[in-house]
Length: 142
Image (cartoon, rainbow, N blue to C red; front, side, top):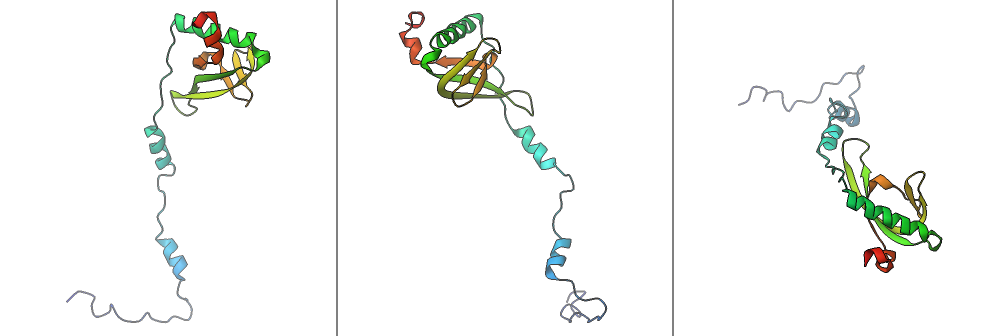
């Protein structure tokens, strides 16, 4: 026999001054709370993986420059091109590589960026590769 078996099944005493608490309020007393506010978010952020930026060699930079110049020469045709480029992470070191295909609206040599028709802006320094049907026609790439 347990220590409190004699009182476990008794009814709750009635008190006209203190009404019984609602089940909702009783449950709220025992609801979990985040003692370390933001801790779960920080754990998730630290476990999120990023990639390092790939440093291009001089030969690769020269090839990209030639491709950008060809796109600039044919800009009135709104050539379609596929860009793989680095997007720096705003919260931590590194970033991700993205690939986007679209029609080139502008190659801005002063701002050093490419603007696509869908308003995607790509900095020259972030570009890893450029692909286009134009390059297959060009004498540099045959």
